Amino acid sequence: MGEVTKYVADAILAERKKQIRLGTYEMMRTTIPTLKEFSEEYLDYVKNVKKKRSWEKDKVMLRHINSFFNNKTPALNLKENNNIILQPIVS
Image 1 (cartoon, rainbow, N blue to C red):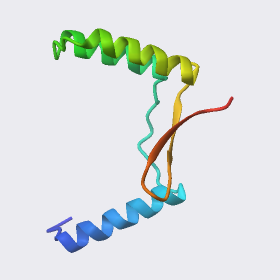
Image 2 (image 1 turned 180 degrees about the vertical axis):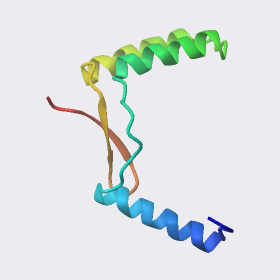
Image 3 (image 1 turned 45 degrees about the vertical axis):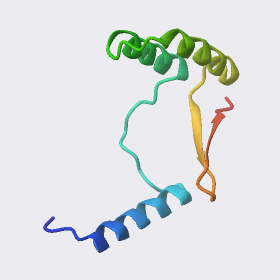
């Protein structure tokens, strides 16, 4: 690709943000885990890898979040003011 200047990088970033806002950006084709699957993997990581002492608090927090989203894959909703809002996918 050659040398990338700050100007070129900023232009690419602006284009990506525009595509994301418009919903036309093609992300890598991966399967998105459910919140429950992610929670289990996260808790295993913080408990056994990071050795985080407050992992039980995380477990309680994630239980409440999982019950709110009813074990579905949440959708990221990017608003124009750049706030990210998680919304449950209605099936």
